[in-house]
Amino acid sequence: MSEREVGLEEALDDLERIVAKLEEGKLSLEESLVLFEKGTMLVRLCQGKLEKAQKRIESLTGELPSDLG
Amino acid sequence: MNERIRDRLENDPRLHDLWARGEISNVVNHRSGHRYFTLKDRDSQLSCVLFKNQGYDIGFELENGQNILVFGDIGVYRPQGRVQLVARGIKRDEGLGFRHLQFEALKKKLDLEGLFAVERKRALPKYPSRIGIVTSPQGAALRDVLRIIGPYPAQIILSPAQVQGEGAEESIALAVRALCGRADVVIVCRGGGSVEDLWCFNSEVVARAIFECDSPVISAIGHETDVTIADFVADVRAPTPTAAAKMAVPEMEELKSWLMQVEIRMARSLWSDLERKGERLEYLSRSISARKMYSLAAEARQRLDFLGERLGGAAAGKLEGLMGRLDLAEGRLEAVSPQATLSRGYALARSRRGLILRALDAEPGEVVELILAKGRLLCRVLEREDEEESH
Image 1 (spheres, each protein chain N blue to C red):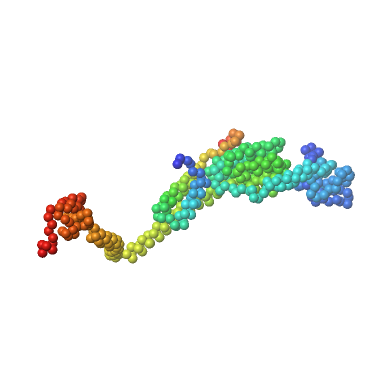
Image 2 (spheres, chains in turn orange, red):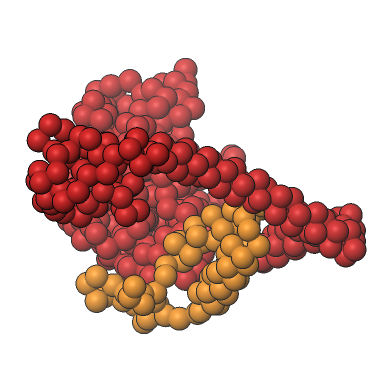
């Protein structure tokens, strides 16, 4: 599988599924641990994305007032 | 005092020969023949008077709710100190009325075509990664939207549009179309303004561009009370640009606390899973002490052996039985077959007359046949010795 950046939406959706599965409590210990690890990784990923503050406005015509650039 | 105010106002050339546009309310047809009414628009109102000597030729009756244009001068009614517009001419504001008819006609047409259909309203993405904004780069609306989206980690794509005046309709439609395939959600917004300023959002080109947009559109045009055709077509209508931005992105603090909650929930469920399994282990280990387990194991082993034996025994017994029967059958066969006897060293003697069982069956000098286990011999009888004779 190629390494590609997971989008916030995808990560949050995955996270929702993982939590639901874990809370269902029908997994073996090994499966639970794997999911827990993956979920924790996703939480970090999402938190990282939310913290990331950067200029990310672009204009389709290139016209962008200086106060926004 | 009032006189000085009057002088001040009536001597101001900027307050003479002016046109005012608005809607009529509080019409009073005074006995004197003068007509008093209030002219108002969204934000303000102005007292007006049409004196009898000027009122005969306006060509229609003044009624509340009419949109009119009033030409006149600002004056002050001294006894009450009231500022009023003294009308010298009044005409119907056909422009606005005509536009409203146009508005209704377009609304009806697009509604019939299904552009406003509830079934085609799309849900907004929960976590958009690309947010398109159609608005004026200079407008306050854009700043309001950006302030709200600010901390949310999405790519913001501004599609600049001219949102009022000549050519605004085409500009907005073009800007909406330019976002095709580039955004997960599109905000079409504009700050408050006059009905004329917002009118471009009542055009068919804008409506179709929004309708054909491949991502959900949030409209936020003017103030909460302004409703345009664009609002009807959009997937969601927001009362203000700020509200539109809030609809487009999740609340950051909520999202952050949700993530924290998720971590806690995962840890808790893992923990309770471990606890459940631990309890089970403990229960099992308590109910089976080591000694008990050994004896159980030994018992099991014995049972296995027993079963194995019985299983093996049964199979062997069956085989033995078969073998026995086979032996027996073979023995019986052997008993009747001469071959076995011959193989022990015996031979069969035969003459032309048949088997030679007694010496008398063959004549001396006769050629007889001896059948052996393997092969046969032809022999000549040299001598004959009768058994009866030897006894």
